[in-house]
Amino acid sequence: MSEFNYDLFVIGGGSGGVRAARIAATHGARVGIAEEFRYGGTCVIRGCVPKKLFVYASKFAEEFEDAEGFGWSVGERGFSWEKLISAKDQEITRLEGIYRRNLERTNVELHDSRAVVEGPNSVRLLSTGQVVSAKYILIAVGASPNVDEDLIGGEHVITSNEAFNLAELPQRVVVVGGGYIAVEFAGIFNGLGVDTTLLYRGEEVLRGFDMDLRTAVRQEMEKKGIKVVCGDTFTEIVKHDDGSLTGKTAKGTSLQADQIMSAIGRRPHTVDLGLEKAGVEMDRIGAIKVDAGSRTSVPSIYAVGDVTNRANLTPVAIREGHAFADTVFGNKPWTVDHSLIATAVFSQPELGTVGLSQEDALKRSPNLDIYKSSFRPMRHTLSGRDEKMLMKIIVDADTDKVLGVHIMGPDAGELAQVLGITLEMGATKADFDRTIAVHPTAAEELVTMREPSERIRG
Image (cartoon, rainbow, N blue to C red; front, side, top):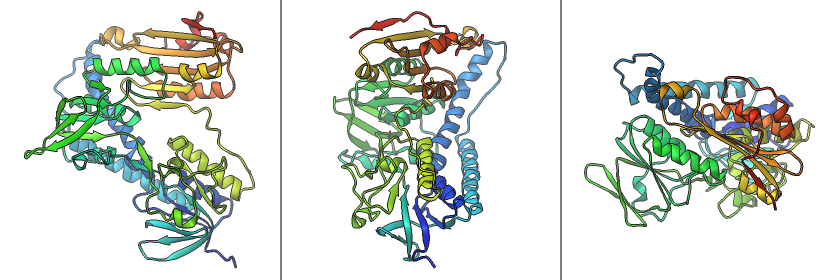
């Protein structure tokens, strides 16, 4: 008999935790998992999946307009927020059921409870008070939306968690922030007909992305009617008797809204998790410190996903969970390479990016060739919509290696996935040039840009 109840106990039933539990179980481990809310985690329940559904919903107004340029006569149209919420909820319930069934099929024992760490090898289930033991513990509890604790009236704002379940669609919204979530929700609300303002304290939206892409997407958002205010932030939120809100900014502006959504980042969900008691080291924001193999300062405790604040993306959490399980239970050691991750922002227009921005590339190589093209997508030649597409390739001039590719426009995320493969393989600009174009497509621009638009020499 083993001295432990489980070989592995996972705290958190999101994408990373579920993948780790399933793979460990297939390697023969006795696995338990605890989830205090719903299986599937942030991504499935209140993150990327419902967000993408909302993005689809918000695009139809423009698509109806565009259809007229192609000869279609679109009749009377209307939108029901209640029907969208209901359909979204049905899909989320279906997906959660799949997550549960997949765990059960691999004989993982499910505990619908909040769990906290009691020690290096013990976990307490708060729903029953039971303490279980495990040879290894995996922390995969993700992160939660930030709200400025110093903001006067901050209790009146919502986050992305609440935005997915509002009782009614507001007429006026202010979204605070400039990252993925803020930019995406600004596009969603605007597309659904809401008077939308994006308020961001930084100089330009989407910090960390290539500056050309950041500027271009902000300009296109403004064309669509979103009011983007940079270099300012709220200092006070006032709620009126009719439920409306007034946000007062540091620069003395007052913004009126029915809802104010805070999207200023996410914080690792480690408060009151018992990690300090077990001796697990965390950084100043509460992220768990781990090595390349996801091991914490306590040899028997590991952590994956957003709770480690490495690369806060669902596919990364899944890879980290899989690597952990293969390494610890499958005798197949490997680690996740975080240096090259393709990603998409489901803004409107959409962004897809892989590799280094121009700013980061310059830190690696003083000699760069920049290939850039901005053009109207073919579909808008007849629709008449004033919307541009941007493609940019960053090349190390000394080695001809492609360091980064950045796209703004329809299906940019789909393109980024394929481009991620080519950059992982070490593609050069010559490899791009040898590739025959697929015509007529927007993507053919990637293999037909022959002369650099800019040569940078250190």
